[in-house]
Image 1: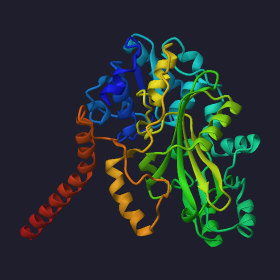
Image 2: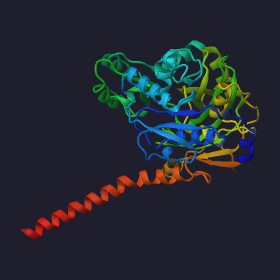
Image 3: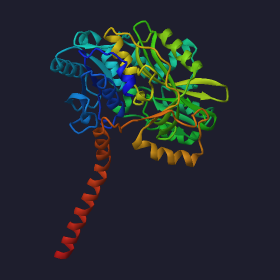
Length: 420
């Protein structure tokens, strides 16, 4: 790692700022970005929920800005907060959003943020459309990109009619990424086994369901693939990586827990062509599912920002997507190199439960290498170990609090009984 980092010449006068809205302190992607640029000598700043997040504990963090948000604040309020942080940093910084809310806000308020910050000149409306399940599906249809068959119901009556002809099981997802921060109709990706269960759920979706109903791709007939990349202002890839997901948490529908870099030229070409067609620039995190039944890769999700597992992907020149963006936006050349095929990524706190669940299901990924060429851990790093221990403490604290409350309640009960 040290030798590859040494070959990357970053502009150390331009800091980076991790931008996140909402309460999710255990986010390893932000920690990875702080380490990635911090190891190059780039000053790193981050928005954090409090002073005790893993990101705030990183030795590579110059300063953290404690700013608790929900992601549902008015855009004007969030922009004003970002500008205040920009004033405190005192020089233009490269923005690195870790969620859709931040990516969309930056694109839609680029005029207000320009000058204080550096970010890709993406089309104003594009990130919101890509983050929307409906918007993404429409773009896939428009440009001939395979995607699961999808329905966007506008009423309960439409769901009721669909239930009579639908092929089950199917999955339900929230139509807009932002719904997860408000009152989501469903919790994440929900597998629906039959028509009776579909109608039960639909009764709670209101007169205008904010969901999509999507074809279920059987896990025994599918493989989960990932594409991470950085595209410049001309929608030309400066860094593009492909990998296969071995485990996720929750199983088959959640965050990557264990994955490998695997060369997939066909998928890389598909992703690059799609990005060129829609004119996107910036960092992307794409989820694809290979359907063995028809031999096609189907695009499931488009995250117009860095993914939590981006540090899995690095090339021989030491470039990941975050470094590629910083170099490009500061006028530096992005070194080329082959991706480090076989490199493994493990998220320590969720891979153990994922491993147990996948062993019970018998699911395997044929394209996963038999042996890793190297391993990148999400939390533990020899040169920056405090975020790992902070993560562990935050995981343990709710359990300790629960035990403490139980002990106190039992003491009170015992004291009350003794007084009777």
